[in-house]
Image (cartoon, rainbow, N blue to C red; front, side):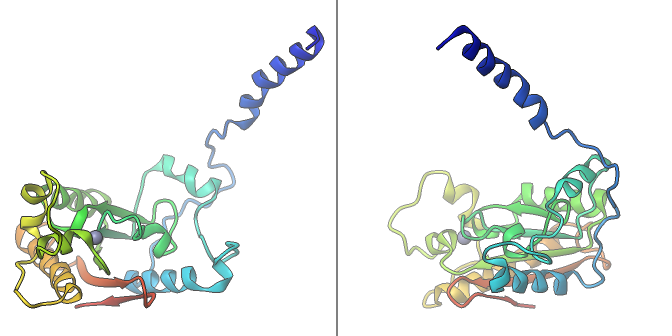
Length: 223
Ligand SMILES: [Zn+2]
């Protein structure tokens, strides 16, 4: 490589990052928080948007809202998520994608089996008390590995799962099937959240349990 070509390559490598930096400015952005009147309806509508052929792919309006530069940069001003979603850590259940929501919309707490551990309760209290979020969804799902393990359907579980997670899963009644226990577990989590936290059981906070069927492409309310 000649000296001149080497110099050109170096120059490009030096300059490119300067142009690629996407430093935030909210100039020209509408940073009004997204506050739907009916959060559960918005989440259901978002799921239908996600399922629609128009959104798979490409993502054309109105799909994938609030995922542009403005939506990201408005975060400089803080956050006002309109819903908390407590879901399983399962890689097939990503709340922002399933409900077709963008930056700043959802306060997501994920843990295997969507259980109400102390850390989960504290995280949700933060959203309710500090961020003003008034709606919570506990989302169970089909083929949940944590619930399967709690039912004793898997021969062995890694060391930390039992003491930290499985004892919080809805007490299993022998003979019940996986879907039933998963649904009962989501409802049980709602009950524990209300019983454990005065902040969460405030009358202005709505809590819904729901079940996501991967096969049937449905998210159904359980309460
Ligand atoms: Zn799961």
